[in-house]
Length: 90
Image (cartoon, rainbow, N blue to C red; front, side, top):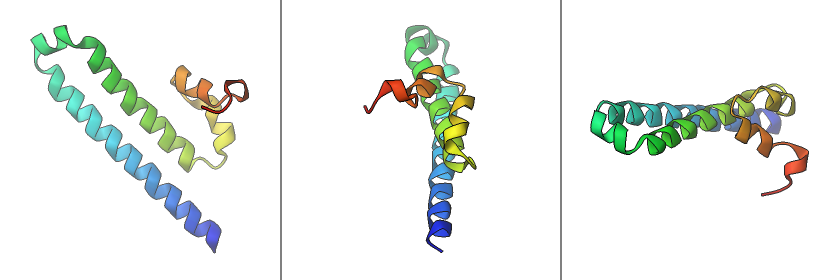
């Protein structure tokens, strides 16, 4: 019974991470509609996009049947490397 509660909890966390990623992407899209802002803040806009990508991958890990195996599928190398045994605790 407790495993079902834990799974439901992790699913909720995953869903929230995905929602936040979508909201962050929408914010980035709105900001990208202003050419002068894009020109001045390209690095910041790319960072906003990376945050959303990381959130989506973390959400994927939380819902994976085997989160340890799913690490190898993470498409953001810097995030994937954080899960490698050699990276140690942060």
